[in-house]
Length: 327
Ligand SMILES: Nc1ncnc2c1ncn2[C@@H]1O[C@H](COP(=O)(O)OP(=O)(O)OP(=O)(O)O)[C@@H](O)[C@H]1O
Ligand SMILES: [Mg+2]
Image 1 (cartoon, rainbow, N blue to C red):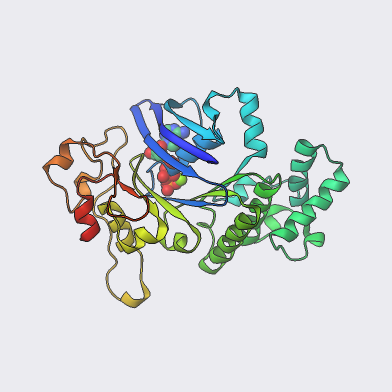
Image 2 (spheres, rainbow, N blue to C red):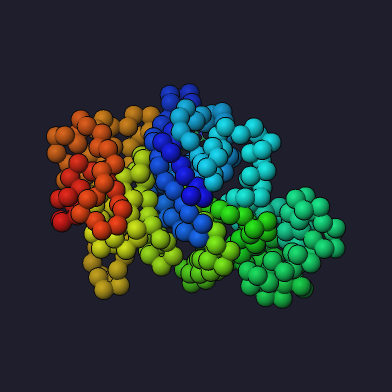
């Protein structure tokens, strides 16, 4: 297994109290596999990813419990220097906002080349040639002419391609893409997503794709982990989830996707708000918003049940997963 996150907990110590942002997350990604992580704003998708990358703000963040196994080695046990090596060469992250992630006063060629100079000890000239090669790879037209240009001279879609090029530079085994296309308009979104999926297949990388857009993941993901209040509430191969969700929260997310054949109808929205992480409700964290909630949901935290009726492994943290599956 390339990456295995086990029982990960992350909390933030703030003036108002302890915010429990991640509360026992388990997920895994194999080489060549795409895991989509879904969930509303604040559900802990990015914080989990930051913990995996080793870029969590600590303090105020703290990891009281858990393991992050990268090819069997627990990254949380590494010294900072060893950790940095893994982060630089073996895994890379792509962020939503390319403009603020790129350095405005360096040309894109310098920024791409820097990776090869620092990590591979290349000469400036060779690094520049590598930068052009990478820009070609992510299909930036006229790469040779544009290698000396600055980030603001590129469109949003092209900048996001440059971010992908940066992430690919050292041929990492794992890429975490945190809402990589959210800031782009819809057609450009699809192009960038296709490119990322294509490169991932070609390099046989593991990909964790964070998004709150269920529409985006259907084509590219192998499996989905749905997060709510810092926990995974449902995990399944992508097609199984679309066929029949086994958690009312997933059902709510699916029902909120706009559909062309239902044009004109009012869009469904899950009622209520995500919980305050300083005071997560007892029982199932989703219970105050759940149309299926019973008494037990208000008292007992549901474990991640194996969905035994499924021919492929899948799991749901709902006491009533069976009813949900057939509902
Ligand atoms: N540095 C920090 N200090 C305090 N709280 C933080 C910090 N970083 C994240 N949090 C909190 O952790 C919780 C989870 O945040 P996270 O960024 O993982 O959400 P998310 O699922 O990625 O949401 P979004 O879809 O909006 O990106 C949020 O309540 C957030 O406010
Ligand atoms: Mg986020």
